[in-house]
Image (cartoon, rainbow, N blue to C red; front, side, top):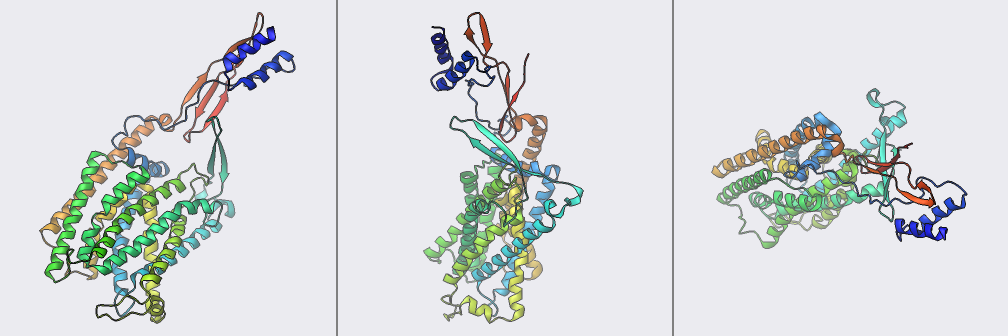
Length: 512
């Protein structure tokens, strides 16, 4: 009778799910084979999945502030300076590359823009892979025996597993620095593959669109790229912009339209085709390029956050050089396929004569011209690696803003190089567009700077809350084992602590 009473009492406390486990523990206790373990009986509290605490300060800037946090956590006070330097490098090289390649696109040299892009991207991917392998074998602490600058670095990765009942366990382990031929290659390829394909297609479509219409029409149709970048950031990355930032985005888009409209007006006066004269296919191709650009930036940002965050399987050791190399291997192959389809001799010049295939034309170039086409890859390599690094430091929308402002430094470099000076827009819409673009970009930067300072101050004041440092204590439960005697089922409170990676770890604090 006493045994049945104990079983009924245990079933009432444990519930149907824990019935077998509870019965086994009671049987061990009543048989006297061994004392009951403090953790032998199941706990009945529900463990809530750990999420970052919403403190209320990120309601207006949820997307950008969260996306900026990785760069701020890694570089601290250097973050704004690195962003500034990276933006300046972006503007410099995005202005140099068109001026450099424009020289080789002449009819007398190598008028194959898609093939040029494929060749240069392929060279950049090989160059970045060589640098990454060189870093692995000559600058990695585990191989050289010495650490860089006298400091040792340990990379810790985290493997999270979730049981059928919802309990999660984290296993931390030390990993070596990631490199292109190292472990988890296909995992890295999974995140880089969409960027590579989209970037290769975008490069080819953009050059094809420029070939089908005039430069003013092309720029007018390209002025919507920031709209698609914002939509891609919201859909893929979950970035949300505050009201002041949205006003700045609208100002940037309006300024770009004004600039492009002035170019279109000047081109029409010079006898060039207008947007109305362009075919529907040409307009559709030029409108698809901004959509592809928005997808490229969004997927690049997604890959950066997944491959470079410190709690992934490689400890966040994927560098911008490695990511760029993997991305451009795919992009160069896509560009090569597009060049073989679109530049295999079917494209003719204005007189209707048929051109040679791009590989025949490249083989027939002088050695100096071939070297010049290939050497453009060094400019592209700096731009591509810096673009990846800037994407990690900032956000998709911020990178779109930086790209929208590039037309100003491009004018400056074109004027210095003497390329297209006569076609520089100088009318009313040009001045208005430049003012709108520059002021809107400055306002966007100030909004993020203020938000970043507020976020950093809050992080220092409430570090444990931001890192999801939660604690719950479970009190002992008791159950009657024999008449006149009570044995605690759990004679020690269990403190559940959650670290910044949302990893529950049980710590037993014995109580006497």
